[in-house]
Length: 452
Image (cartoon, rainbow, N blue to C red; front, side, top):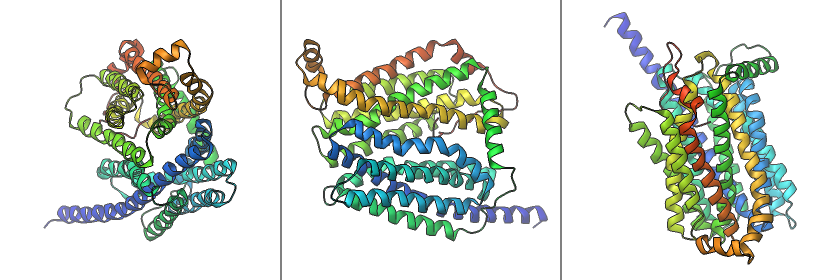
């Protein structure tokens, strides 16, 4: 055996050892993700039951999501500057502190919506500081050849809150309360912290410049990379609109279902729908030689929008589950089509900061949707569909009338808007231009991304 073979064997053993260590971290993240999903589902049901208000539910969602959006870029910079293992441990522990705040007020005689908002906000804040450090461990621990596999593992772990948690939470709520779900989530934090602490080696911190200066500079570089490219700017507007529409279904789907069904049905339906995304990702990964990512994006938007709208047409759990599954099945086409079109038009050295900025902008669509959906549902569409105006009667003949049908009408409108965006995209010259461009020596990333 020559020296080269010995080196190769040593490198292979080292890679396997590193992957085993990373797999342990992912297992901890999977457990934490399932716990977080239990809390998210349970709190949404609890607040909706407590207040009978979609607006109140949307306010809690904003408090749970906005700190994450605002601080995750900062968390990314800190992950490059400080010990990532310590950041992950502190993030998990202090995120649990937010849940303690929620648990105390829920178990009190007079639960406070304000305190719940503070609790979910604190939890979101520290999750934003922890998550980039977890993702950065891919680079710390693994060789370049294992990045794609590791990315897929992280995707599965993060999506567990959608694929597994709702069904479990729905069943548990029949025999216990939301307090139990929060306690289970808190226990998963301690398990995750123990796993992170056990992985001591390989998570190194390299010397970096001052975090604040680096963050400011990279934000400017991200803006510079996007500015001046009309196609990418148009894509950012399109994806923000997509996220805006999807924000409506996130808020309105629960009161829509609970108007005629229970928590078990809602949990099963949410899980079944989310599995559509997994199926869609598998189908796209099996496709060979995609000829047009613009067409993929357009069809994804149109299909997602149509099935999105159909979810609001009938009070039928089987039909809603089917349409929800199909809606999620089209989402990977949107995610992959958009990301590849943008990636083809950005130099490799600026893609990280550019995608970070794009993600920040597009996810603000959720916040806008959360604000509008609650107000529109409670004060406009629900009263309208419960009234006896001629227009309400005509619409009610199609989608039904009474409690929950105002939410249904909003879902139908948002779905139609998404389908229209899909049609518009297919004819936009600035988007078609992105298809034809490609930087020299750049390769197209065709794996299933997490999305913008």
